[in-house]
Image: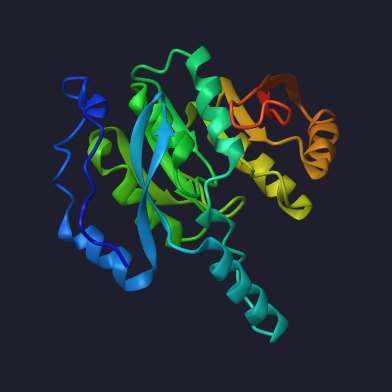
Length: 246
């Protein structure tokens, strides 16, 4: 387990008033994360700078453990897909360069490590980062602490919870992988997206997301698709689905 806060890229504190002290990580956040999770700091490119993300130390081991518990008949065990930062989040981060986010209110659903939401906050947005399970949120509170003034971190379960506001922009990376959650995801978008807002959902062209595209295309949404290439693997781009209410 890790508790000592890492150094922050000086470029991350370049905007006056938007970033906190690079070394001021509350002991309460560090202690809670270390008590509940095996985690580490990971230097991650976000919004064209190096950012320190608090991430699971061994995501593969967490997934194996969850599968073993499920195979043993334990109920209520959720696959910890949140424990890794997926390329879809990096692609969505890159797409945010095309938007003007300064002082915009942004909601990230299924935030996992919080990559996309933090990318929006670094670009000047006021971001609410949410996930359906509590574990990743402990780490997101650490990762977002240098910009805590622009971030709040809350639990939000699709179709079950509703926040006290609506947003002009909603972000979600790799949130379309489970067919049975699509109606709840759509309800979450209906509940939280402003009538003139936009939802941006990214994925690495998964087959299941192709099915989601066809499904959502029959729903009351205007659909536009964008392709984002990443330097690590240009042959496998990221798709960003742009949804606007009809």
